[in-house]
Image 1 (spheres, one colour):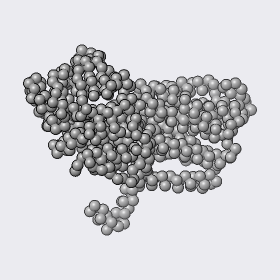
Image 2 (cartoon, helix red, strand yellow):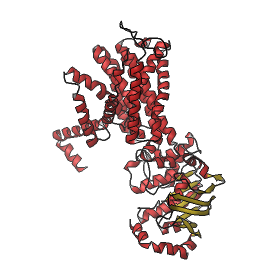
Image 3 (cartoon, rainbow over the protein chains, first blue to last red):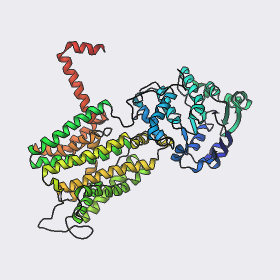
Length: 245
Length: 358
């Protein structure tokens, strides 16, 4: 369980995150909102790339913000990035091993098994020895997700994993994401603009708009919420063009 | 395909420290070349050429350290020649001050230089790119200034161990098993091989993966749990250790050390040859060593002016950056393959038709 209390981030005069209080329960949680709503800023706070002005984050009873950022990964926090960040120079297995060997769990003996297990879990059908630099966008995304789920993480943050993927790939991605809590044992927070992906994966969803939490609850209810419709209708064109891109 | 139930793919080949096919071929080529160098070369060469190839081996190790910093971690240091000078100083000092066996002196020199060189690398935690290069170059300049004042140890007393003596000074000793030039050359090559092995082990294992992540994207490295500070310093420590060992070898090789052997401008030349040799393969360091020490000797031998080197390196850098960013160590085999294919095509029409079809 992740308890966010009064989380506020300020960049000069801008407040990308304004008093966000929310509890994420085990399973897959959606986090949606128009562009600039503060979703990625929220992830960056959890990762330790941005220091909040106020607020606290209790993750499974531990104060997440008190940990140095590299230690958060060891604790069990993983993430993917909006622009995919699989390490090109390393092999598929090397990418996944990278996260495994810096996490607390497992040892050298179980690494190989865990790494290949994670690659199998995301459904990557490539030679684990092939360099990531030679792979296409879809495979790189899956490598990044395999890296995020290997070694029994506690919390996995997925930042627009579906961006730029064709529909049939998104379907596969949705099944992978849905399987993470059950098979990898992690709480998942999914940020995406693809509402079909979010509704397919997440029982609960929260909505940010201009840094403020405007709704949270069961995904179907949230998507019908009037305030949410308004927030999205206000920027419908932006949303529409992003779907195409 | 079912996502969650997909069984782990069996890949008997994969292990974190496996060499791929290309690397195995390269390793075999290198072992053969090394055997040739170790057993056939020394007896056939004059004292002059023996000293040149000894320095090629020494500067291959220096290039290896710099290549690791640039190619693996993405940190440009322009202070490696100064670190080499520190290593030479420490090595010479230990040789005169103690009666320790030479391998122990090598190891100690490596460790002491590692500490000093890591201090030179401290700015890398805050700076990168051009600014890091500038800072390291200035530190190199500062080290050279200090060494000019203190000179190198030559058997004198006190901490500095330098004495002005017009009648010649005792030379830095060599290992008892390698007193002669050819023997010392073999000794140097073997120590260099050990350094390359250490580098290979690092690159293929956990540090290599962490460095690759840091080089591409520090946020991604952090997200995977890489302690960036630790691994950057580790890279500097490793490069400095190797460079320190190389400095100690150099002290034993030349016997008497002078500041002019470590001119600050040499740092820039070293960067050029390392880039030309190729920073993405550790074997590029051997090419860099050859360019750095053998090429000037060849020019000298052919009676060409040494200034030509600057022009050659300038053109070489342009050539490499434009046509083969991975360096000569990749370009040369590729060009040889292309040449081989061309010859095949000229002499065997059937073969060329088959190739065109595929």
